[in-house]
Image (cartoon, rainbow, N blue to C red; front, top):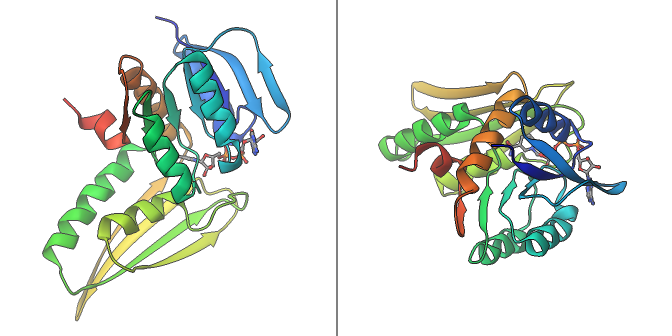
Length: 217
Ligand code: NAD
């Protein structure tokens, strides 16, 4: 089955990778929107947004106009924007995640185990990304911090062309345990996007995490 999709941020690093992988899987981009404006060759059946928070109003406009699902990976969204997505999800199915890699879902699961078993230990998060990344700290670091549920320091480095590294460390007196995830290619995110597209196409409404895409029975 060929899916016709709209891509917000189509000219960006992630946009290009998404178009490549979805094209290899037989799906067709029929609408693009980015800083240069709109390009359209047909009506989309789903919107994928990997752009900037400033594009969100336009993205939601497309979702309402065509009455279609949304997969959004854009980071740096405000509390208000996240609340808007939540409200929109009463009428439309939405997958929102600050990280579409399988490995980060495993890092989150391990973090949950460490958090439950190591009360009172120090926790530090560090993240390294390419020099072009606009938001700081990364959305993934914020996800890890939210999971820990208390004030935790995040160190952010911007270096070269690194797609994304995250480490969470728990320190006790006499020992430290660290879990590191390195994305070595953006392909890992785009494979997660494709899984999310297939997952959300048949849903009626609701706000879904990438964890639910992977593990919901
Ligand atoms: P990029 O800078 O290469 O591309 C950004 C794209 O957004 C461009 O096409 C640009 O034209 C467009 N854009 C910028 N401002 C816009 C506006 N006001 N209206 C419409 N379009 C606008 O960035 P990137 O590396 O492709 O990353 C895009 C987003 O995806 C970022 O928020 C990044 O953090 C996020 N990201 C998420 C994941 C994930 O797994 N969730 C993984 C990687 C990147």
